[in-house]
Image (tube, rainbow, N blue to C red):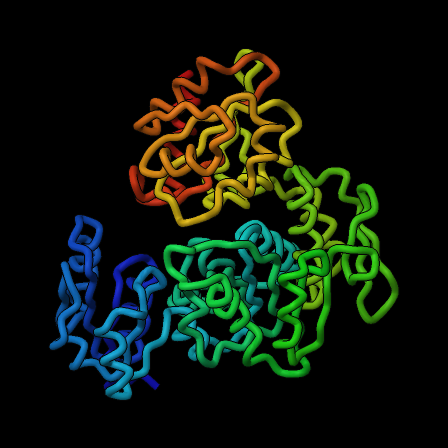
Length: 442
């Protein structure tokens, strides 16, 4: 498939580096190109240098793109750039790292997408399968590129992969044996011309499934259920009592082809209704993939949640500090606010993604005593929440300091920014770690 081919890797993030290693291992001639020219990109080129025909940073040249007969594009690279359009016109195939890895992977794939909850649900399914004794790869958009599964000494028996809309834009043959769409809300309005375009990218997850595969949809999300027309496999749902997975109190009910199953979720720690939805979806997917009920129950009792997602950092002098840096849209902020069980000092801000802030004004008014907005998006947040007094600050550190000074015992300082991190941080993880380190110094 790859031996002797001229493969250009566009973008030198984690997935691009993994794709370069994988294609070279399979005998391809490899070059890399990145529009950025920072220390991270230069370090990646130094690391990959022995494997490369050539490299370029600071732009994408027509000469290098003309050299390639296959382009593997990273998720953050906009495919609408003219240089990609010109490559398509020459008949050059453009795929992503996930598609590349799938073509070489023998193991079945569980694919998970949605606007919110993808990472937590992916981690849950992975832990359930690991608890069942399966050699399981867990990654994708969650952090570890799928290509790494093929670079490991021992390949996985099954892969659980979180998939963003950007990654789904570049799939062609990807066929998940179990595919899930968890929810839909406006997101990435800075990338897509319309919400319909964003939804269409998500819907691609089901395009290549076989009738014997399984699709999992959220029965309580009308936008998700509207996508059921694209499902050609067996359809399963989670949410209400008429679905295949639902909650009654602390009991999770599953109904598949056989007898009904119940699971005790009283010890499940991640807070909020949305985390119960994640658990219901995960348990359903894990059972469809063959995990045992015992493995699912064990995971329910031991799963602690993921960092930067409503993560409790500490309680100091009666004030709870919560890191929800992964909340990068107004809708995610709403979900987080509804999961809190005490008054909130809310920190919003970062780089705006084009969301409608007015849609969360009722939740902010009812659950937040004070709001601080920082960074590039501060003025737009204040305009979108015009009826709410908002204190605008500059640097992230200043927002933390002022929130701490304002908080009273019994309240929570909640970082749920509703924005991307790129104005002051490399990613949401770095932003969340900055809060963690700040709290540790208190």
